[in-house]
Length: 427
Image (cartoon, rainbow, N blue to C red; front, top):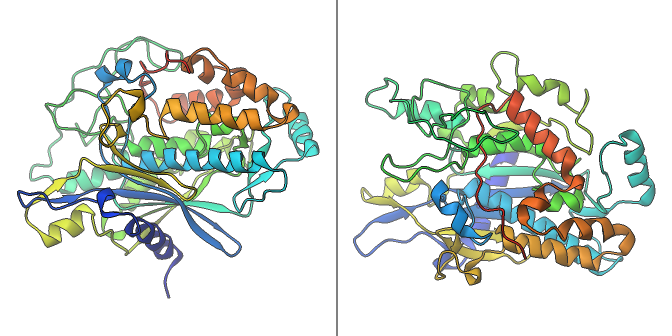
């Protein structure tokens, strides 16, 4: 019998197979066989098992490039993070579809009643609860990754792959302007360095001679999603986060380290780095605003992705990482991305902006708000009229979400440095 984890993995892989050849790794003219990680988000409910978003990719922008991006280029297109961006685009498109007609139904979202909004507001009057939509409570969200997410969940694999297992040299300290949720002194943000230091926040790994990045590892970003839900800031203005949490993370059995995943993601008192947030679980007391610490289960699959590093290495001794990333969703998104922008476009030209970029997502949010009634969307439209993207992230409607992120970084994901520099643009 096929396990649920295998069924979810197969569904994501099969959806990727349907994409045209131009979206897939290739064999280069010099004989190099390309490989790439794949991640996908699957919705599971009564009579429903559907891949709603997927992505491939494995690169990110250096910190020095962020001031040039102007909301156009995606900062981090590792498969896991790009899949989450594609999922959030999917959610906003579902909101748009529901806003176009009160009679429209969705397998994933439902309209919230005025009584429901009033009731949740009465429970915690310090938080805004006015989102017009909610994720359906009977539809679970699961995530498949063809590789173990980079960062803390993969450190045992990194150690096992070394000929010399002595810790690497500590990287240089990265100075940063202090903010409310960072230290006042420059702090090191390691990539794969000093791998004997476990349970710490890490930046995306890269070659030693590559420009430094402050994009946090996929392990760290996914761990944070246990607190913020899968919704990013813009969709969280339209959809209550209460039921939009991941229930399972599915990883290849051959790449799985139980101790690493327990340390990285769990609130286990025996060493889980999220243990300081156990009191924020729904059964205890969340943060308000629909937010709580909702841990997911980590499960394994024997299914393997055709273009995984392992599968490609089994077919050829000449392998190379693909520069091409892909973003896809179940309601129409399909893009090839190189360097954070649409394939074939100049890196920071507005014409190169992905639908999952900050600029395009903000514009989509404004479109949805305009389609809603004044009662449902007036206050949201006002928030989305912010003069700059940084101002939008600071609107009062997102106060509960900011508080969740700040406490999680302070209590569990210590050392988190904000990746700043791309927030001054406006629409």
